[in-house]
Length: 424
Image 1: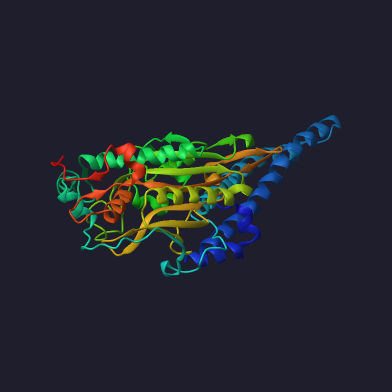
Image 2: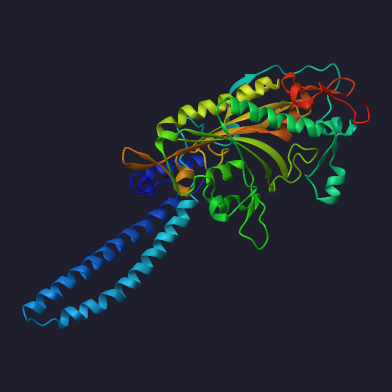
């Protein structure tokens, strides 16, 4: 959530950010209009409260001087009724302004390219794209031929975009998770396994829920939503709390399943486990002082780059454009892996700086020399495991249909390649 002071004092900056995102500037005008009404009412309410307090003194003084207090008593009787009406209206305006504020996206960083996805900026490429002496298969054919993946049965019992992982593919999934957790622990991150569900208030502390609601699953007749990422649960950990400045930065490595409807993706990437409703993810999440957020952004981005290098996949970093990034970050860099079957780079994860946007929504502050300030929050997909498995499998497939496993995972898997499940 943006600071109302920024909208009041620099509406042109906020409107320019809206334009860059391709969103209407009229939303800002609505907030300014309601805020003006709120401030006018607030002034009236403050004057009435002050007058109410002053009346008691005037009545006592008049009584001591043997003067008539009839008019004063009449005014004293009328003020509470007027005040009650004004306070109710003030609360109504404040709530309406708050609702509108919650839906305004974060301000776009000056570094972000303006435009749609075609304006995304490739920052750097890593690793070598493999050259096959045979026609490479997509991951679904590879893994189904090895009897390690079954999406057909899963679609019968759960619907499309679900799956059964089988045999050593299950071990590979957990190997990636455990390796990523060990890696981040070695970097000083605190490991966190989060709740898999959140209440509406906790969830709205991380995201504008009205925009994201169609993407997440709600538990019927309960105030609970299945999380789409551990980021939201990690953000909620310090909601309505004041963190000691000495504790900052706080760096979490969260592990959780993620549940997403993938609304709007109908007919896209329907084969296999590239785009699914349920997957596991290791998430980096940081709470820090405002002046440190740029440094923390580079730290968590470099962690992911190092992880991906060790997993021996070809990938690149991409600075997202103003209309391709989410509403919460000020800046996002995607990490995209190379997928031979698609002959293209596709998203594996993202790294975002959210400034104080989530902290304001969730009321997360720190004490700084007697002053309460909002922290900055950052998040980064260290590893989304199913999609990473797809990338590993496609880039390391062999002519005989087996799949080489990155060396760094051998201690976690206990094997060096994926073979057909009925072969030893």
